[in-house]
Image (cartoon, rainbow, N blue to C red; front, side, top):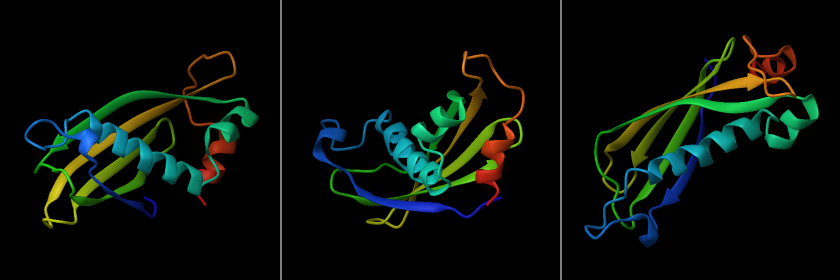
Length: 133
């Protein structure tokens, strides 16, 4: 649906276990970094949502690991919008640049709320306008 953004990182020592393999929970941290870059590219960082009187809540996450990341590996996280009409679906791919293998595919689903925190059934027009640019 949209152009992907990419960020490149290196696996730090504090993200690995005794086998020097990235602990599975850290993948979500990497996804969050890419999601933030993607949202910022559309001028939809947290302060933008606040200014619009709209909240954003993580509803669903999923990550399929296909090959491990290890200490010192360089990797790229790609993120792109898949669907934005009712919920904001973001897809991800983590590519290990050191080995050339795909390390994971993932997806997150975010929902919008009004200023009181009530769930909105569709993505507000002001947000859609920025997502469709």
